[in-house]
Image 1 (spheres, helix red, strand yellow):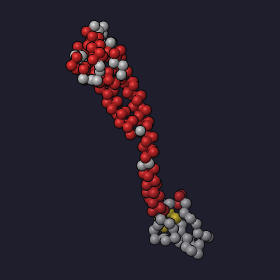
Image 2 (image 1 turned 180 degrees about the vertical axis):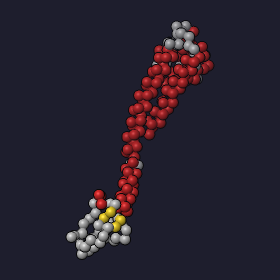
Image 3 (image 1 turned 135 degrees about the vertical axis):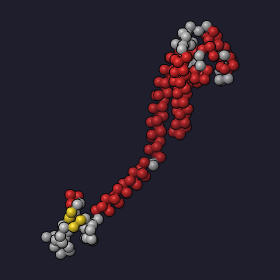
Image 4 (image 1 turned 60 degrees about the horizontal axis):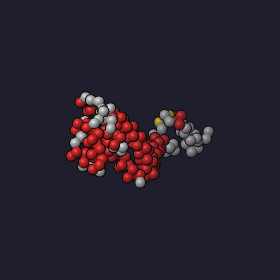
Length: 180
């Protein structure tokens, strides 16, 4: 008989051979047999090396950049959907406002911070970077609005949705800065 290398199926018990090819009897893997490799030690070392390789590969900056780009794309999609929904829902109450303020994020910021149509006062609208002419248009639209009455509960839900759109916009800006 000749010496043989252990196979995976032989992990529990082996019939190790000495240098002359004579069987030495049944023994448990690695138990006092210097000729049989310690498969458990090899397995543990292989696992540790594989884990380290995964750690190194997962730390590559280009992979993080790819994830940031995908997150930016997803965030843009969620932002557009959320801002559009808030604008359309609020438009039932104040349909003229989305026609005047066409930037959905600016509109959502106004909705979340000001609230109902009756709360749109010159002082609350003026400090938002609008021209004086646009502020006057918003106040005039408020006074002649054809929008319906909105309940406090629905207004709260629309404001929450608009606030979420503003938060998504902030997240998008941060991701965009990282990607660039």
